[in-house]
Image 1 (cartoon, rainbow, N blue to C red):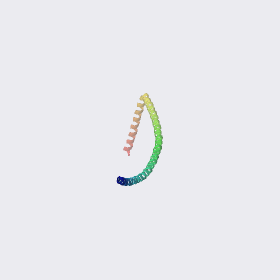
Image 2 (cartoon, helix red, strand yellow; image 1 turned 60 degrees about the vertical axis):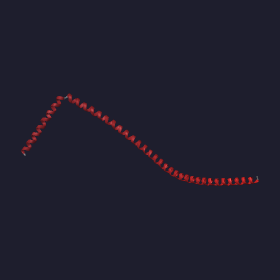
Image 3 (cartoon, rainbow, N blue to C red; image 1 turned 45 degrees about the vertical axis):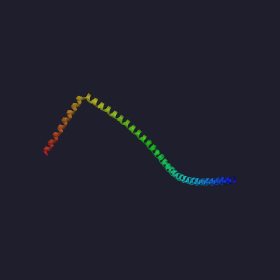
Image 4 (cartoon, rainbow, N blue to C red; image 1 turned 180 degrees about the vertical axis):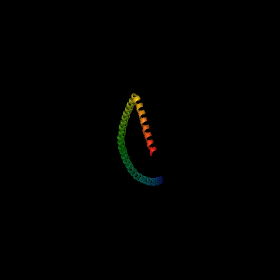
Length: 140
């Protein structure tokens, strides 16, 4: 029976050695995996620093662009107001011209006989001037 106790102690010792060897292998694999994860995280951290820098630059450019657009929009609003004022002025001028045209038309309609007489006299005067010019040209 004593032999059986020794044999079981040897089996236990061998099993314990096998367990320790297996644990050593597992721990070495875990160490290698953790080292790989650490390297990956370092690379990721460097990439994140680059991305953060680029994002900051992009954000600054976007803010500058937004300010520029806002400034130009304000200037454009001033131009639109000026054009609106110019349109109002032109509308008023057109109305004045229409009133003047109506006034002249009304006077001409009221004085159609006198206007016709004036046109006839103008035609007669032009004919006399043309005859004089032609006589002078023939005598030269």
